[in-house]
Image (cartoon, rainbow, N blue to C red; front, side):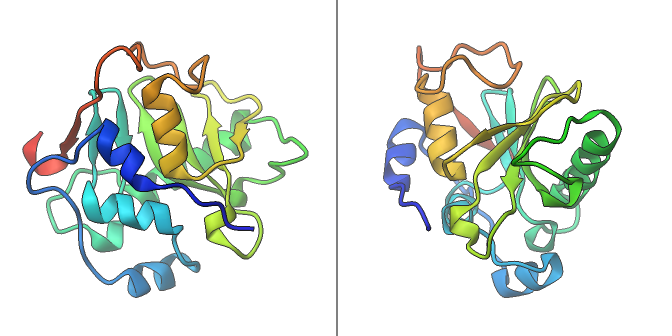
Length: 181
């Protein structure tokens, strides 16, 4: 069952940077990946684009939407790296049984991976997954990407599942598009 999260709450907490957002052929990106991307993620990418939050978290757009010269590794490279890390050092759980279930949409400055656990036919129902830099059992949050980011950045998810040293919830977070970095 798809979950609903009003991305306006995230926009109020963290306005997008001037000239942000990525556009392109989402159908072609979905075809290249073999699935439709979750709606909240597509809306985030359209409004914010690829970039960093407080120099602590990076959010990736699908490589297929990015122009030549965009920072690498992108979403595909991070997904391959996350899958490799899970195969090497991860601990399968009842929810996360194989590396192929992981698709990375972000990462932290402390090498944690943020992604989806791609289970079920409805991408809007995929939970967020956090894979720690040292492997182990991934953490799974039954919420979409935008709701997860809002909870993380507002201090609503505590303790923070990423090793970034920023204390979110104390001051407004800032998103910087990759072209402005």
